[in-house]
Image (cartoon, rainbow, N blue to C red; front, side):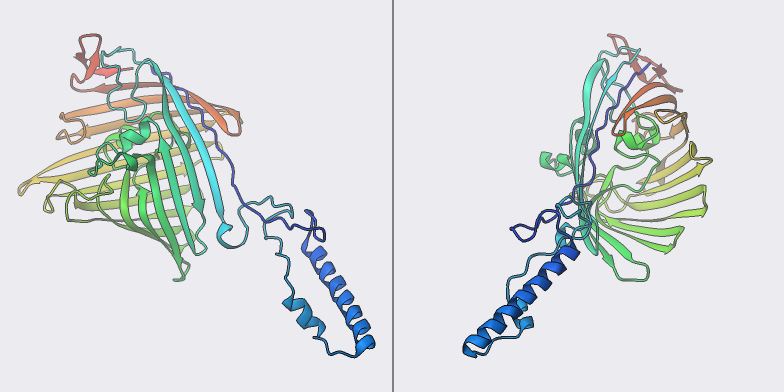
Length: 414
């Protein structure tokens, strides 16, 4: 049995507002107060002009010229309460700026008690019989209006594992999960283009545990698809329920390319009915070091059915193949099924069942068919704190999992 505990702390949106200083305009100033103040100043200037004109007959500027040439107090930014407390809707550069923080830790126990103290076929929750920091994360993001950016800084074992195959071997890159600029071009309904490092569009799960149904990642997420890409991506909403996307990137899990070829991808997200969503993605390109000939291809399909507000079902299918020689290919395929039942405001249940065929040992270095079953209970302690208790059973048609101090190979682990 694997008992994993997740705790996440999420902060809200940060917006910087501008407080009007000085004795004339106080912290509670509104636009109406500002207009009233300007009118009083105009009346006072007119009165002074009249007095000066009567005294010496000197020519003076008009009231409008005097007011316009005088230093003007800054207006209260839209989206603030007049006290500088914002909601991300300020003016200028600060408009749409927000931040978020998260901490994720767990304890795992493997009943096989492997001497390595490592849970096999797991990508993030890999430690046996110890408390571990999975991921500490900070996000700074500016909404594209029309220019924006996003920066995700990660620390922990997850950050190391994500970038384990990065060709550059630069440890500084491991703290960056995403870093990209965004521009929304005025084309039709708006063409969104990103440049930089971003997470993959493939799969039914994401890197952050809190945003998945289960704590541990699926076999498909761990073994069948990439984590991230570096390059260009674009998306365009053809209709309110249909969006196209495309990517041109260096490849799978590499900021620095391992060959001179490029990988391209495209797909769509379609909601034909209110309760149904279909996401289809395809990616192809050369991924082997210094080899532009042997291409890798990936077909990824995810279908979501929201039966009610409290019941959701998800299906994920992946098929991949790669040329091994001019006349041969290796391939892998898998299917995963998910469900989530929101019992009440603080309790949810989420079972998952998977089948994965590593036909030529692409992911596990052994030809085998693997299955796994996971049952997760989620407990919401507060709006920004959740814990999860999870049991998972993995089994293979080959002796693959290590057990005991001698690392005896067996066909399952719990």
